[in-house]
Length: 197
Image (cartoon, rainbow, N blue to C red):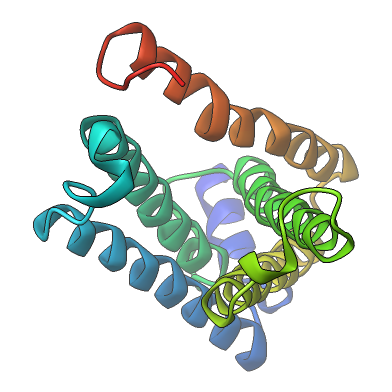
């Protein structure tokens, strides 16, 4: 009886994403994969071996591969959110990860915008430090944040996931950013992989 109920739930058309949401899921997965490829290219071309970051090359390599792993996970999560037959992870858990991905990217974009405002107003750095490449970079992360936001809302509604799961995912975002931007570099410095600042 339980297997029949599970099969019925999986084939319920109310849990299936529409064409637009499916497209957003695929594009978001491609975004994650594309950015992962850039990180991989950096490693195979020794991008950080020269220039002002040469002393940090070993630590940046570790960070780069860590980010590659996160992006591959992000691509998988985006695809799972629009899969017709969800597998591997319970809807409530996938919803937490989707909301976490959205909030992490949104928080990163918000921090970049605040930094840019600081540069424009002269509070931190100079407006000359803002270039087209930086604007394009933040814009691409904004697109990804929107993509994961749409997927998180759609998935939560289709699977009737409790709002507490969204809150849990959003609250996990600062912890993930802290891990990426503070904890891992601090650990690498303590291990002697990166020089101290």
